[in-house]
View 1 (cartoon, rainbow, N blue to C red):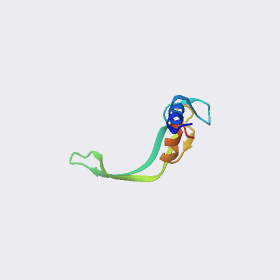
View 2 (view 1 turned 90 degrees about the vertical axis):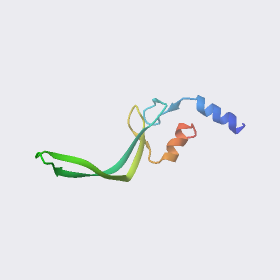
View 3 (view 1 turned 120 degrees about the vertical axis):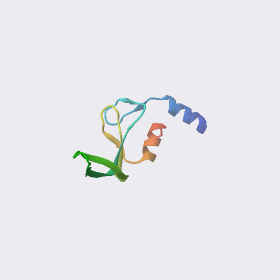
View 4 (view 1 turned 180 degrees about the vertical axis):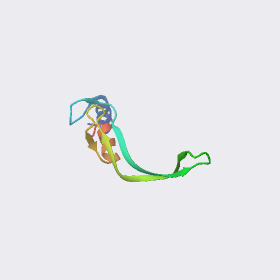
Length: 86
């Protein structure tokens, strides 16, 4: 079969979660992110948190929006699934 035809067929068939069997049109993306804040007391005696810095953490997950089971741990595999290639 021509590759263009295969791509169209893959886009038309429903995506099914391999864990719960639910129909999936998107994945939940959960990523660890580290945030630092400045914690200080202001001139009125109130304590405040002010955002200071943030950077990516060590993990990311793509999960089913129905059962919340983790399906993938990298974007490339998640993209293949949503394209119907998995």
